[in-house]
Length: 488
Image (cartoon, rainbow, N blue to C red; front, side):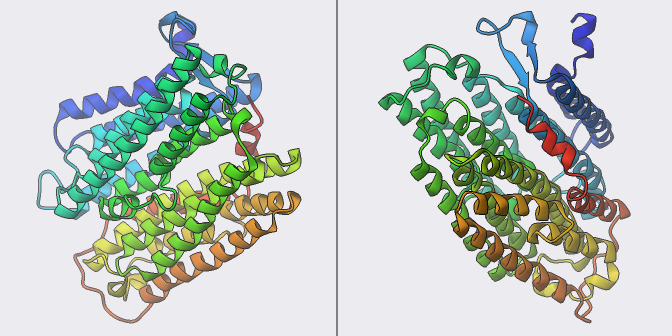
């Protein structure tokens, strides 16, 4: 690489996690935690540097190997990509710190704690796949990132080796392959129609032809399945609820957002000439159903981690309100909807990682994963319970959290576009979120002694608290992330 290329953060955002993941694999089972934390810290600095460059100078392009498109592979960092890269770094680093303490705590007597065997290499490959997907500028390399991400996520889901985890991982694998297959068939149809997969080249060429409409439908369905949009969410609760807590945090906070990001980019990008108000309303209706159904199911769960997993199904539903609120509406409503949806991506990522981290600590302290077994945890792990409550503030959409700002922007978009029914969904969803969060808090404050397996490392509590505080403070300092959305 030339000197200027060495200073470019774009290739290093992909190469760095691949490097430390491979090094962790070479070091052996359960090794590589310190290397991962150091690598993710550097990656966070690179993501912030890239975001600053994009804000100052506009979108950045990088030709892999010096070969520009269409002959070579081009990576593109616009405002949306930089936003997602920063979100990944903001979540992955605290989760890595949490994971080091968690895997030591779950089995102090074992040389290789349960679930930690290949956690670090798979996490590195997962982060690299996320960054590839966010930076890719053509349909095929988006598929490559999507497929690598799914395989790494499935491997992480099955890490504990327990029967339930392996069964959930297999279900996740089948759903992931089905979604990726539908997306790939759409790519093949587009390539057959236009002879290119470059997003920039396709943008002025796309027309409402039958083959292109079929391609768009296949790709949207595949991505909806991978995002676990209701009623295609069947694979998510057992996968996220049955995995090790650090894995659950990564899956819920980051992995499902990648396919949503891709759907968002395609819907408002190359497929914009094909989108209709009816299709947008359908996606919004499925999102609204996810908010209600996921919240009701969360209220019914007896296991703490399954409650948090169903909460993810509900919170993902809010993201799909952007489609009816920004399709065929005025510029003010569309801008508010975009800001609300993307701020919800970051706020939910921080809050959900915090909630799974806090839940993991409380399960370790209680000795079992049961809401009814949390009595006394509030007195023994006040920081973890406080982190859980703060994360709940964000999920409920209470001020001054990032969740409040996100839902307020969506509410403004709904009223500005005359679609008041989406405002009702936002209010009902917040009330239902309050119900299942307070159910956990009430149980934790009961004066019943929980079974104890000993204390938990402070790093678990502090990592959960840092993530939860991030979700709340986002509501106070959300202007900078939102400024990125106007670039590109």
